[in-house]
Length: 315
View 1 (cartoon, rainbow, N blue to C red):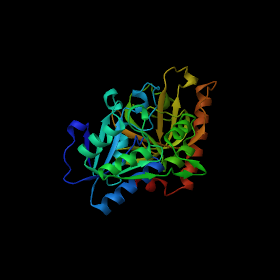
View 2: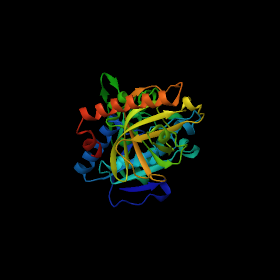
View 3: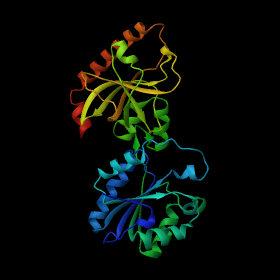
View 4: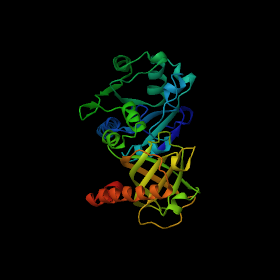
């Protein structure tokens, strides 16, 4: 998959394109529906498949407050690649771009630059200065340039409309199991293992301390999967401030079960499966150790009841 950063670097792909447009943060079930339709239409019409996405989030640029992203840009691109998309154009969403009129966006960007013949968007898609254009406007202007527009209805799951905002809310509440339903996979962060205070080792449960740039970190104790050295291991993860030891900064600690290799400096991916409990302060380190033993029993029972879980996670 070709990754292009900015319109100035956009090359001719050798053929007209079918373009899916969106932020695609989280690549949830609704986004997946759009990308599958993009691949289907591009193959049927013999067009190059292209995803147009934005960074940073438009609402951040427009001064509506910082958006906590479900994925890093790298994670977003990695997941788009899994759909067999030919190219992704990452557009810096700046003031200049935000001031484009709806007509200029279609003519200069979609038609002249991207050579689009088909465009796929969600039903709530907005574009142009002050978000002046919607799907109806896109179709109206598109007809002037022989541009076919497809609007994809929202995906529903368990009676709710799947959206990035819903998933963000659930993750920030620590409801990872519920969020995973709408994501269509496990919520995952990635980073590097750094040296910690080794309190876990002292307690008898050595942990990998993880430094990450992911913006959403659910708090609590979780059943998780850790991917390191290209292998996946069952794990127990705590995200919090270690109140038993009067910790102040937020830390991510994961105990990899049946694992004893050195991991400092290594890249690690951590998938959150289910929350066991909230983090809390214990009167003594020994009482904390006893609780961790109970947490591990819960985690082991969980994995024992799902013997094919790791195989499915690899896929």
